[in-house]
Length: 85
Picture 1 (cartoon, helix red, strand yellow):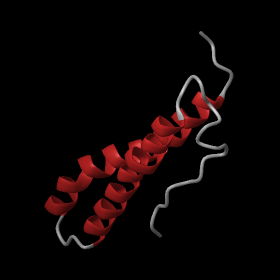
Picture 2: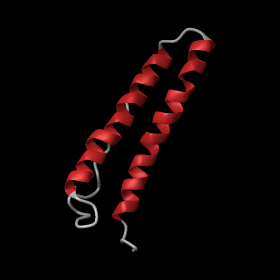
Picture 3: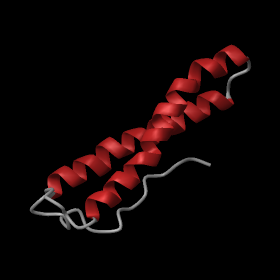
């Protein structure tokens, strides 16, 4: 099953004036979406491999993009917590 970009639990402008709507949209729609796309591509490539050497070669992409996909929702939720300056 392919990974999908999760919806934010709040609007893009909910964190203004601390984080602008433009930054939130860029971060969510571009940055986080890139992790999702790359993870899906790496998983598809892994499924198509036939040798352990090919699977090992894909481990870095799986870890990096899987970690990015996992981390992004957590960092966005942390940003939604009360701001402490």
